[in-house]
Amino acid sequence: MFAAEVLKYLTGTGRLLTDCLLTLDALTMEFRKTTLSRRDDCAVCGSRPSVTTLAITEPETCLMGRGPLSSHG
Ligand SMILES: [Zn+2]
Image (cartoon, rainbow, N blue to C red; front, side):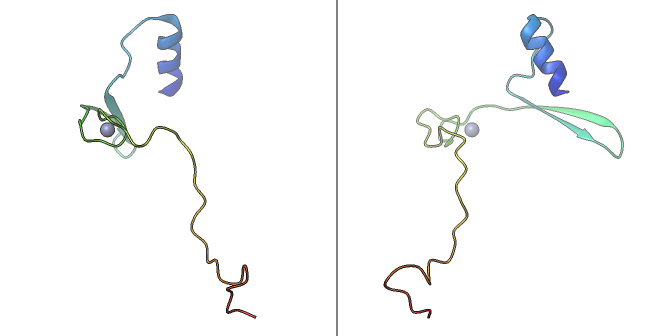
């Protein structure tokens, strides 16, 4: 599906799945297309987005045992 979207985009043909979510139920092999709309208060697509990168953050880890305030031996 993604390759078809890329080909359509590159060749300027067909209709792109813009503002849509295409899902496949593998048990029945049925596709379903859902139209999505923007939400003004959304952190990603809203008018003032706070999420603007795809940065991956490291999971929080226990900081005990590191540094001078450590109570671990
Ligand atoms: Zn959004």
